[in-house]
Length: 189
Image (cartoon, rainbow, N blue to C red; front, side):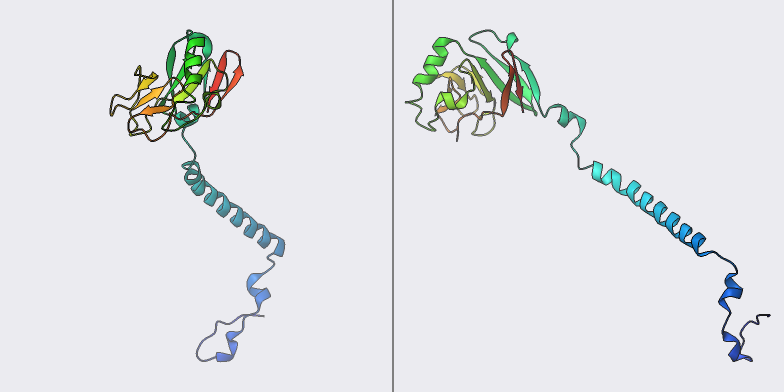
């Protein structure tokens, strides 16, 4: 059977025999081509979407500072050291018996934001607080009238438990999340 192209002179010849045009194209082959095209399309979409999704993850520097381990053996009794955690200073103070007694005595007299020393520490000899004044974010310095820290910017005074005792600071020095890994190491974060 010959197929004639439709034209205006022979309008009845508009129907084309599908089997004659398509030939012996197998339905399985057609489905395989559809599946392959779909797979390549999905792979391409994944390649485009992956960088956008990864851009929402924190970078390596942030992940590295998510937690820090502090060796307590390098902090002499009665002294404090400063460590950097998430871009902010953290004070770790190895308090002696006199300093602990002063901090416990301050439980009754801390007037601005009363908080017991025992609630701010996990072990009495170790005080761990953020080294950022709660007024405007300055870094307090050791010293002051109450045995703890004094903010050089606006004069807030913190006692030997990090509680605000005087000045414009809104709250006590924050205690970051930390835990003891053993007797000589803490993990901050």
